[in-house]
Image 1 (cartoon, rainbow, N blue to C red):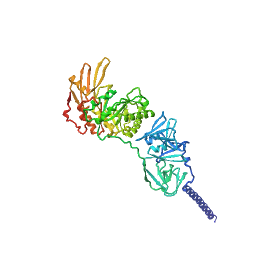
Image 2 (cartoon, rainbow, N blue to C red):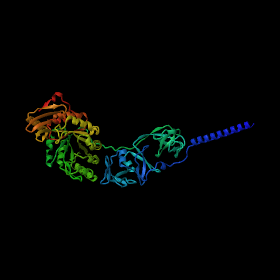
Image 3 (tube, rainbow, N blue to C red):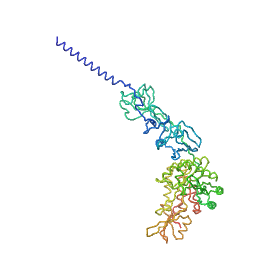
Image 4 (cartoon, one colour):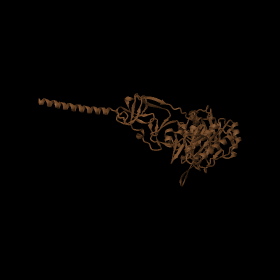
Length: 581
């Protein structure tokens, strides 16, 4: 009897233990499955330094914060350039920011709550730009006026959400009331309680997909995790920008431009015009070298004459006055890096163009330094505005494109000016260490091909030479001395005749070549004449460029002008290109 009672007691104890264990297990399971309701603030999770705001570009947090001053967010200059690629230009000396639209020049003073459009003030709610240390900051209020960007600001924590351009975004919506948690875990703290049908952005990243949670970002810019089962399938939505990029229109000719530069060094040389143009009917633009940058305040010297323009127009020519920077006592950098000097230069050029009733302005600024490049482009932007308003053609002369001269920024030139002129000569120049062609066929064709990767063919004018160089190699006790002389076509022909030399066609340079010895030494010449010009002009024609230019009028033989009729220009049979005197 006692034995049976002991068994019952033991069984009872075991049952109690099992109930206790089962209860504890159930409690643990319940605890594990019970969501954590503890709240955590976004401010605690995403702290930001005073005077700053988190910066989001679409659904991604940017590597830098925005500046936050007086209820306005600002982006630093490096961020603006990286994200928006704008053409803002800052003059450190004058503390002035500039921005150019097709018919407007915008000026923005540091610290001022407004900006000027063609000198008319537009008010803003906060300073447009700030300068802190050496860093320039742009207000988002300003940026939305001149770039394809929208923004929203949210406090606690301070954050800015940027939308740039248009984009397809991947959304989800909640299917029930749920929680946005700090980690992909039921026991993680709750950042926000979300209602049914709340939209969130899918934001792949650390923890995405763990424990059945997806990483998302609220439309207010807070990251967190939501159970996948509480979300709809992803769907795309296109956020479309209504921004319209300013269109820089171009004043282009319907016919091929055939431009001739007239080298005018004195006022008396203006009288030579008629002799240069009366025998050719292909020329339709003449560019006299009348104007020169003369002071670092942006003043221009001039030898222009009204009678010259009138006579040129009688012959059906447009006149594009050329301005150069050949006065070595004037620093082009000093002029172009100063907003005040640039403004003065632009006003002088426009005033001269209107005074003499010119059809255009031709910029021939050469030997620019690397540091001058950005200021040169800004000058062209600002000049283009005034030319566009006044109906003047703006053209710019350039060396052939090379990597080391990339700061001439031909792509930016093509955006704002009407014609980009490439001077496809001086392949071997006066001070060249070796003798060679002034403009071989390959030199021109490469220049054409390279510029067309950056500028539309309708805006490209390719310039060819009307001269050649006679190279002389003379042996001296110090070694071989190389010298050269620039010759017109007729003088070069006379030189060969005088020395009884026959030049032979070189199919690589596509020029006649000759070398001979006389008392001066070993002479070498690559002739520029009708056949070599034909080859170059055919390439220009086939590339469908805007036209051709020549340096310079007066150095040619009259027979070459028929080549500049692009409609009739055609190759010669190969046997016709064998030898020339």
